[in-house]
Image (cartoon, rainbow over all chains, first blue to last red):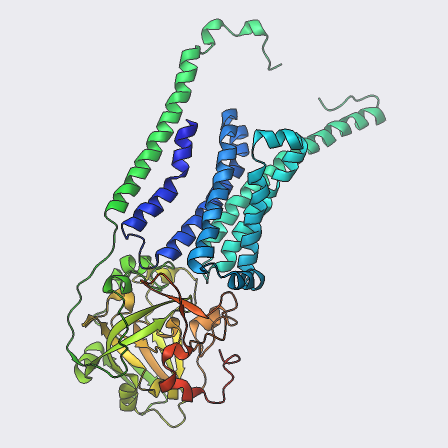
Length: 211
Length: 320
């Protein structure tokens, strides 16, 4: 099952390679490769972020097994995306690349988005969870929210005029983040309401709660 | 109370373990089958990629031009399947598929404004009246890619001389067709429709500027701006407006669509200039379609000899 998913996640790469070998990537193959790898980075980031909400809503706890794979694939495609830029766009011209990172906002945030994924990729193993301890590990891995958000902004800032696609990704990300916010806030609100119930009970001795 | 006591649930209602696990397997199998089916369709697409190829009507191309470049020409397949034509979608592959709904006959070009003869010309007038030349020009897109395209057309100046611009006329304004029924991209307001462009009159009268009616010896395919379009090779490609229905002579600098969309990114002049970056990317290099390595972008796209004098004394960073 996990192997199946592992292979499935490589499908976008296989398709690119196949099309590349068959000259079916169109007139500007490097542009297609760049966009495709970028798009799949975002998609895998969103998949990773949707695992926990899906687990809870569909009551499928075993989905957690795929979260690390999805996250690492996001990093994988992100690296491919970066490699395409470094090699096929800039031809390893470090000076040129550094100028771009400083001057072009969309490249600055894109680079930031990828760099944020690096510590997450490195600490993705069980060993690291042990080393950091569950709480610190969880806190560190919240960086994925920032990475995904920067990725969407990167996309939004690079399109010429048609913002529909980046906005779509942004909306999906927004919903996923909203879910997280809800999952975090609602129990706390319920706790607050529960505590209030006790307060009311104390101040009006004739009425006990609101059952 | 909702929670039943343990003994309330009869043992017959407990799902047998085998069925429970089988259901999970079934769900996973169904999902896998769906994924494979979708994938198979994708694979089928890959095996025979849908590239649109058209055989257009042949044109009577009378002559070659000394302005043509001898560089390697971009293949017809690339010129006709990689197009920025937002009226037919904002990606470069949609126009080839979607532009086929554009009706290019009957077609008229209206001439108005500060001219002696306001008139509406049928497209066949252009095909019959003007001697068609082959002009092999470089085309440099503002995005950073370029092509070498063997256009077939005639000098814009020949036509402008015919319409006799008034002495007050300083600019030429061009307008593309507006018909959201035929041009689905116009249903979405990514740009203000119809697409408009403009040139200074002396730019329009420059011998390099042509009205193109064909490429590679045949009529223009729809995705390339059929039936008649402008080509100004020393400027970024978006200034070479497609599918022209109106040409107006005016005394004030006319609004241009990309300038209206992002005034700090797309100027009226938009001369190809490696020294003036687009705010979001450098213009120093370009990717010639079909080549692996990037090339240095040339000032005025390499047409400085013919056009640099138009801009003597102009600050090209200010008038970008």
